[in-house]
Length: 144
Image (cartoon, rainbow, N blue to C red):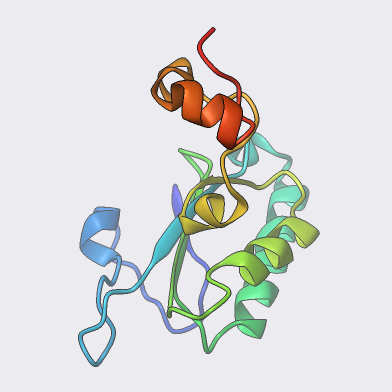
């Protein structure tokens, strides 16, 4: 099995693509935010270690069951996808709880990155776009 549902109430249909399973709106029609975390090589971890990590993730999602709407771990892609109800702190507390139990988990993309600000370095394209303003006002590296 390459994809594992990490919540009790979910019953995935084998072979159904993620984009068809992920909820995008809540009961009242509001958009639901989501984010991804990469867990490098979890698919090739020893069975005992992998099951331990999966159980730890399930316990985290049980603690956040009022917020987490959908959680899926794709072992083939080493990717954890989470959809949650919007809250003022975004996904910060959930990301911290996940990395506390599975330190290998790395945030891939979300509003969380925007909340933390632009990381040092960044891509060449973003450095060039920032130019003088980014270098002198924001204290970010300028053109290479």
